[in-house]
Image (tube, rainbow over all chains, first blue to last red; front, side):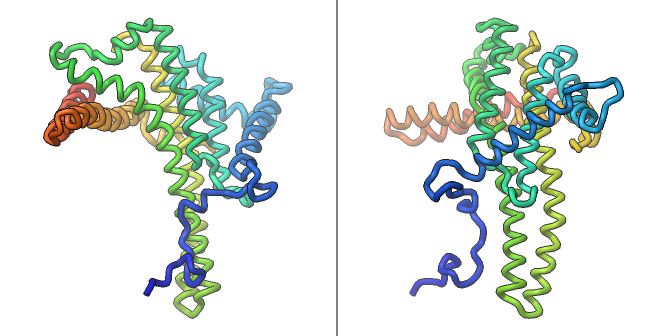
Length: 262
Length: 73
């Protein structure tokens, strides 16, 4: 009666959300999983790289210093100065850390043996978004005062006052609650979807070539495997782009909180 | 290498990025806030029509706000 499902062992097991669940590394039920290992390695990597780049900084930079300075300079010039303006210089350390941390955790999705973007687990982007949210709200409240900050947020000037009853709750909700959530979800689902597509191309290609076989299977599987290589490069681009977008939006929110009048 | 920011346009493209997500957030918020109020009233008065009214009101208000903030230049 029942249809032969993919999960029965026959046929192709298409990748799905369960590919994002990992057993513990030390024993199946232990708490330490692969995403955690990636976060740990990524944090260490970013810290060590920046430390090495900054140690014994010289007027004529060496290779490490040059790499560190180009990342930092990119965040400083293209994100902080552009999005916030001159005052943005104060926030470059946070923004640069954010950018390199997210970039490293994203790129773990295409690094051999790791091959899992840790940022596709919602907890990591959500926590980063909460930090950004706390920072831009704190800046806004300090700059404009508690009342002034929420007044500027909820009452954009130039609207007849009865309409504010309708619009003020929407503005409050969108700035205060929706922003951090979209910030986190955008990063998570970009990484989630990208990883899923890669899995599909690789596992599908493998299945077609080795399990299904035949001339059609081998041909189609080869195309799929070749496509996965192209997609890996594309994923690398998306992963850097998403790190950039997350950082840029944080900078824009900080810039908005700094602006006195709306 | 980090993605080249000049590809996605200068400060203009950047503002577009913010505006797009701002508009998206406003639409979601409009439906959520006034739809939520409408749902509460519906539960209270046991009449589904208030949920519909709330959703439409929120959608309309959010559209107006999007136009007001981003659409008038």
